[in-house]
Amino acid sequence: MKIVVTVKLVPDTNAVKRIDPATKRLVRTGVETVINPFDEYAIEAALALKEKLGGDTTVTIFTMAAESGKEVVRKALAMGADDAVMLSDAGLEGSDVWASAYAMAQALKKIGFDLIICGALAEDGNTGGLPNALSEYLGVPALTNARHIEISDAKVKAQRETDSGYQVVTGALPMLMTVTMAVGEPRYASLKGIMGAKRKTTAVMALSELGLEKAVGTGGAKTEVVEIAARPARGKARVEEAADGPAGAKIIFDFLKERKLL
Ligand SMILES: Cc1cc2nc3c(=O)[nH]c(=O)nc-3n(C[C@H](O)[C@H](O)[C@H](O)COP(=O)(O)OP(=O)(O)OC[C@H]3O[C@@H](n4cnc5c(N)ncnc54)[C@H](O)[C@@H]3O)c2cc1C
Image (cartoon, rainbow, N blue to C red; front, side, top):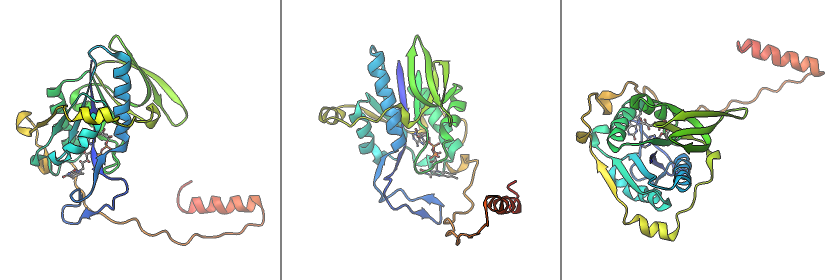
């Protein structure tokens, strides 16, 4: 079974982030890059499945990122993945979620997969929309927010986390899945893993290899960032005093009604 884990390379969580006012995009140069923390859980889920299923199960890391991110990808290989593929091309610049998903889908078709595991959210872009767009372009079902995963005879059974508990969902491979942090704490790379990663392959794919039928990059973007603004500072809180509970409830009721929230 071939498992592909999508891994986004993002600015370090603690790095000071800056938006380029001209392009209205996050400045990624000169900032330490790390594996999107949510994707470490996706890698862990894939490696745990590989251990459980054994046989010819493989785990491939896939990222759409600048080739300079190769060293960061190596960290995913050191955790235990078998190989990696990077889709790196200047023509991808300006791709929004749809254009990114389209390009990634064409690369994933080329790589081949039985199961794609994505993180639930990228710490920088934060839309959580890419995996669903990807499943749409790939024509495979998306099982989102999975935590406990079982696979046998090409059938998947997973607990899907919800606000109030979980649902048990089943489906057939091939499919795409997003995982939550409840799937299991990501393992640390061992010294053996770090040394072994140096011998593993990270292939670099260019757009010219994909035979694209749609535009990507700025020309393929369906959305535009019109304005970027800092969150306004919080105003002073309004303090109300009420004689008793019912009077307090009335103040809250009137406040919500005034704002058309009731
Ligand atoms: C108009 C516009 C222009 C943009 N231009 C650029 C640009 O020039 N450069 C740029 O870097 N971004 C650009 N972006 C942002 C980019 O489109 C998003 O970062 C990308 O589509 C993923 O969305 P997200 O970050 O919200 O990921 P989410 O949907 O939150 O991510 C969920 C999961 O999808 C997977 N995933 C997401 N992105 C990748 C990836 N690249 N590789 C592998 N797995 C991934 C991960 O598993 C992740 O956990 C642009 C956005 C817009 C709207």
